[in-house]
Image 1 (cartoon, rainbow, N blue to C red):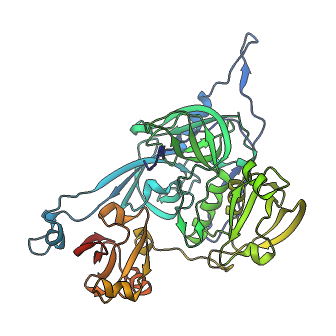
Image 2 (image 1 turned 90 degrees about the vertical axis):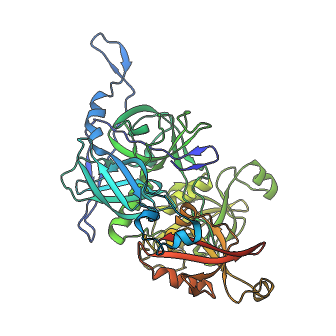
Length: 490
């Protein structure tokens, strides 16, 4: 499980039995279909044979949906162990002494989303995995291929070579109501096919667990459905469903002081999940539209400080360098109150709505500007300020390392008595932090004895490496003497 402060990533899956009308998404270029279910009226109680009101029986629901839940085991091979390499040929022995690091394993849950073997789960369940295995509810086990991942939503799509599988259908998460019953099914603590029930406690929650600070700002999309259905470590990547069997969300996190269930679970809404799945199937990478704005939820402090005329909405405090919103005419101090026909009551609501769109899509943004509502059409672009298709990144390449580097001023190089290098500006969740002790501020002077003079040269060098290639980063720290070496495999 992933952890940030007192937040732990977890997940689950659940479902229901009521038959509803099905709607099919048209085939994409890969000929893959996703199924959607139209929600119908929900009941929390039923009448028994004596005319008494009793709680709704969930048994039929659980029986029908459980086969759509899978157990996922991810294996990270790690660095080659010392005994696997002849003495005198192991670079790790030279730098670190004998190493005994072997494969590491983690587990989670997943949801089958169509009969062709596509399974959605959490990115942190399969991130950097060398081998992914899926076990169905009938104990059949398959090797899975990672189709694509999206760290901004902590979602991933994997596929097994099997057809005719039981699966769950997507339902419109916008129609979910606070207080309605939901079920969760998953694999907590390796207890497979565990079913729990609860209600939706809140919507649009931002718990700041997926933050990814880049040059474009925080790129994470957090607008979670909060539930009190019991979820625990091992449930990550499972599903939250309504009482009609519709997939409402992929459970991703719990808030807990202990790491176990404390009554607060969080799921990525199905309207975000389905868009991510469609993109990964059709394009191999998420096609995400951007407004290019810095925003915050309107609260009493902002209302007082800026003399705002609204009490809800998303306040625009700034713009990115390549901002489609600024280009369209939005201004600092505007409060976004609606996009198209969807009310925007917080920054999370805005991020969620825009996150469902692709570059090139057009939206009508309604802002409150000094007490007057103004409607501004905006053509969304990608982070590069373009409307074209984004190509997928290699999972085994540079992007998986989880670091950001920067060029170094010539005066700093002269002071350190070195001729070249780039500095590690930021470390995220990636192979470097998992496999080495590298720290921010490290100055990389060489990659496998090749001198590095710029960020461009560093990036191009690593992008040429293949999965399994041995990489040795050599360099120094400004406030420490001597040369340091960090070794890992791509």
